[in-house]
Image 1 (cartoon, rainbow, N blue to C red):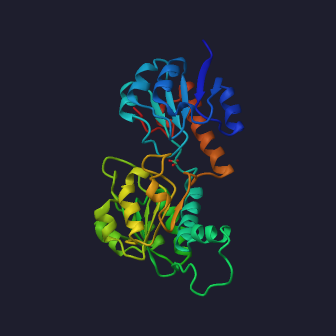
Image 2 (spheres, protein in one colour):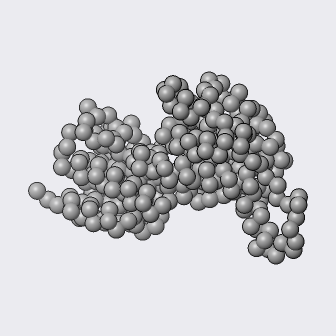
Length: 327
Ligand code: GLV
């Protein structure tokens, strides 16, 4: 039997590459190389397995050309970059990396919340630019967390991890989700369910987006929703950029309709709307919520393990992180 060939689209932790090398020949792309659909479609027919990033466009066109391909393992929990229906149709498996990044993302959401409510980036810029001449009693006043309502849109694993942390800071938890979570977890988090998103938006002091990007969640936060937010409220987004209409958000920030935003993801990533770059109190980070040494290695190993299982013919039902059908 010929040696398996595995394409990894970007450099990832060496331990993961070593593990994959026990399965076959591994080629690793350079940063950003396979963010191009045509290039990926050209090279993929040589490979049995693809380990790719959330920036890799795994479209129907890419998959249709790849006649040897058995599995696409995304180095991410979100997989909106992959045409899963086309993969299923072509009998190519798709895997993602749930669970292993939950805690890192929970930590990060809280950090982004605090950086934004306490205006870290504005204050740091002020200092770096040499304006800090004396302690100011009215300088950079922000919002305290105790007794404030954190409204979470998308109460999955990461939403819950964020809620746990926010509770420790005395925040009240409210949420909107497709399905209500179990009464036990609601009780543990002290979380109030809002069936009506608009009501949640208008009651939240901090509104956090933790839902996947789907047709239903695209531009879930638009001008109309932003209008419902309170003037002192802030928006946190660590899910996917297109959940927010970025132009409308930039407008709301510039007109002080809302007090701030903490963003890790962008509508046209890696491009950032120019009016966000100049918006007051907007913490802007380059999609790093899961970026810890521990988590990025765990993500890689989980993706690589799915590749091993598929290449070695393990029954689909025994592969925990497949997102294509398991039949
Ligand atoms: C990161 O955004 C992920 O989906 O894992």
